[in-house]
Length: 594
Image (cartoon, rainbow, N blue to C red; front, side):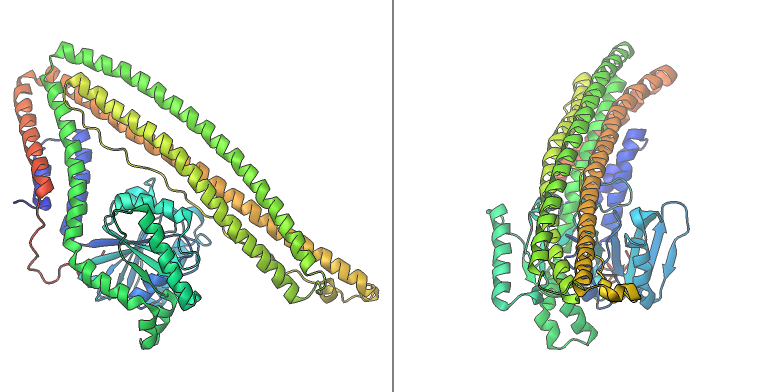
């Protein structure tokens, strides 16, 4: 029985003279063929920002290669594969030559310069992709690790959404934090990931922050949440660990600390069962994508074949009918765009109301805090620390609440528009299929949405007492009560400015999430709709051109198209039962760099 790789080769060879629309599908097939040939298992490390993804990767690699504690640039995954020496390569999309370093000590700084929001805001350096090679027995088993921006970021530099990137991954390490074990934002994101990645390991990180009983409670809570979402399909294993302690233990050459960190159990699962399952996972993901692409290629070939068989007069009439439908479809698209604009404005109004609520809450929290420290010296560090801690806790909770609120609202809004968009794209296919009298092939429209940024807490600037600043004679002559009152007024003003900065930051980041996400969704939809319309137009136009220029060759073209259809139909019938390729004889399988 043929393997998926062999069936893919047959599918590509079935179209010897592709049309432009067929060529686009064949290009995607060739990308899939590259995945088959590489025999590499791509494992994405995903999760919310500040959950310790980069620290976990450093612990797995046993070297501090990835910078930690930086805000990621949107759309910049980092690929980590096996190599003969430590190396980082950074490619750019604006024509600049790639840069490369083999200095292990310099790699974190080079990476931070190109992936941190602070040093590369909004990816103004035009980084296209980042690849790291490391000496690693674990990676030599044929695994590529992918460090991704946190939840709230997209994964590719161009306009692809996170889901489009995840379709290229075979497994995922979903990194969560012990406090809290899982948030509503993470649960919603997990729903999307599970649609696209066949195997997920859950990492409950930062267990060193918990007592033993709390650790057990956190594990049980996470397991219960996952089981409740999927009662008939228990989640893959949960690994409770401390990536920070694991890395420290490896830096100190192991010892009991490494075992206590919990990392060895994850390493055993990755290098053992995951490596052993690699072929099955690659087969499952590759076969699923191959079925989709071959079905799409078959549909386009049937459209083009039927156009060749249609008499010229009838074909022109069908082309005119299709263009009439296209005008209506464009009107429907415009109405969808108008409705999306209205929904965007409504959501932004709700954001302003939420911002006011957070600001009023911050002022109330500040008043209570000032009252609580009223008996403490205004210039004391303890007083400033108390205010900073209180406001920090308030905004950390406000961040989680607001992000969760608008994540949920955005998900619901885009879900409605995505269904409408998918229906309109499928309407184009159905219209073409009905006109050409062939079965309609209506694939599910891929979701094209993922929020891009997440607000963060900015601590207030240290308030400096007037007592410390006043060195002049006039200041020294002020009564102590007056100096203390002025110091307290300055402290309150500093705290209010810090609170206002955080409110403004939360508002700006949430606004960017809403506007960027909806804009990207609309752009992706327009591209998909335009491609669907153009594919049918091209089929009819090419048939008319062939009739006008070389009508004697129509019969041969039809015979070729029918032969292609027969081959593709046969491939689709064989794909569900396709077997994995036999193990390669080359012992170096998987040793190639990413």
